[in-house]
Image 1 (cartoon, protein in one colour):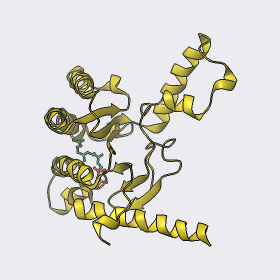
Image 2 (cartoon, rainbow, N blue to C red; image 1 turned 120 degrees about the horizontal axis):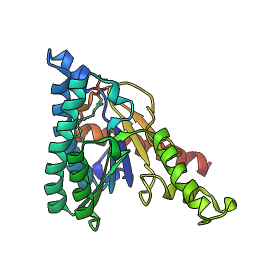
Image 3 (cartoon, rainbow, N blue to C red; image 1 turned 45 degrees about the vertical axis):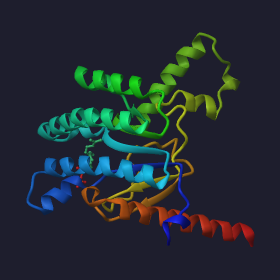
Image 4 (tube, protein in one colour; image 1 turned 120 degrees about the vertical axis):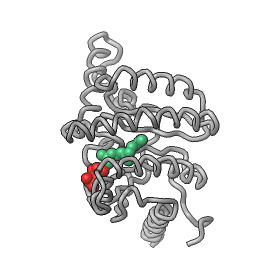
Length: 240
Ligand code: FPP
């Protein structure tokens, strides 16, 4: 399929799985896989932008990931710190807005400060939108939303029958961000893993055996081809 024939989703979400296994296969520590994975993130952002995708949301660290060995958690946090700095420069050059979704309160004060500055300084940019999920879990996000919503309800800001999908969505970390059209998970697992459960209600899912450190533009295009074919199939059924 030619790139020009591809149907381009507005929003792609990714579960970047398989860093650990990729590294182990090469006789390297798991953290080596995460470092390679972080480099891939930078390339994929550029590729997504070049292909015309407007929003990209990546799952960098889940609320469950704290139970990993402490050295691995430390390496990941260091990587996020470094990445946010690189991201800041990229965002400035490319008119890219960056938002972090997840419970930021559990992150180190330095990381929280980098996030605050990055989000503040890119707030007006709209060339490309990158969302990074750090300490993110969908159930946690929905509970935090419910708590905030209940506070507003108690203060009489809205009545019970005014609670609809749009109002609920507005309390989520992804408020103002369109729902993902396509969710990609690498490395063979076929689970949602507490990722954007509300937002993925109507998304197409694409699974590949390729590990995240090996993911590249060609793999992204393959996912877009599958997405385009599904859309055509759906189109045929409705025509008949
Ligand atoms: C899953 O692989 C990956 C993670 C839990 C971390 C994702 C992080 C990165 C790709 C690197 C840093 C990201 C940014 C935004 C800088 P896994 O370790 O679960 O792999 P496995 O299933 O093979 O063990």
